[in-house]
Image 1 (cartoon, rainbow, N blue to C red):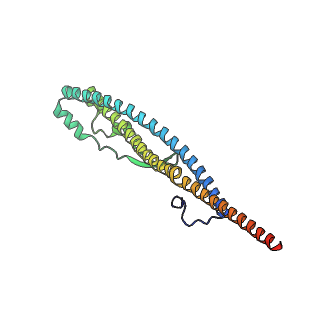
Image 2 (image 1 turned 180 degrees about the horizontal axis):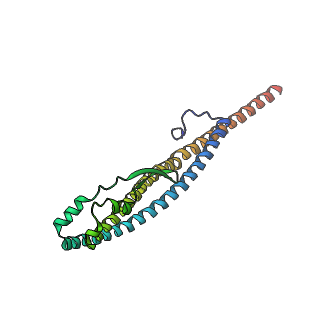
Image 3 (image 1 turned 90 degrees about the horizontal axis):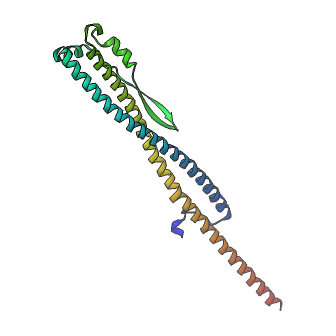
Amino acid sequence: MQRAVIAGVRPTRLELIRLSRREQIARKGRDILQEKLDALVLEHARLTKELETMAASIQDQLQDTSDALILAGIMTGWVRLEELAAACGKIPEPSVTASQVMGVQVPDITMPDVAGYFMTQRGYSMAGTSGQVDEAALRYESVLESLITYASLEGRADRISLEMNRTRRRVNALEHLVIPRLVRTMRYIEFRLEEREREDLFRRKRMKQNMERKER
């Protein structure tokens, strides 16, 4: 039993009270962490489902965009289409900030107004191009916005997954290590106190018997 208890503990009633308080705090902490873990699991499941839906949608968008680009190349000519693409402005850099989700710091990836940006930074006049070129450009801009949103959600899901694993380890440590060891230590102290009381009782009886014999 001694190997399973906390080392250096004195078998006293004061120590028993102190360990009892520690056990109560450990159980409350475990319950709070378990509630947090349950919430994180639900949020991660929601994000995973949203990412799966978005991935399928992006695949469809990419197929439609590819079809629009092929049509634009056929109608405008691939050489002219390359010239128009080279005249386009540079894609704006995304900004990465942080926010809190259930106490977890997660990344937020955003970009400037993509549609409004490319309307002014395309480098060519929409009046001088075919509708197929403009359609392909609009579809690529829409795909870019979807990819940025997907990346932001994926980063959030990854951070929540890390916090889930960290919280689960803490819950398991409290459930299977800290609390059981506290309980075993308290039982050990109770056993030693009871053993000491029996020894004291036996000693008092012997003293009483000796005194009675002397009186006789």
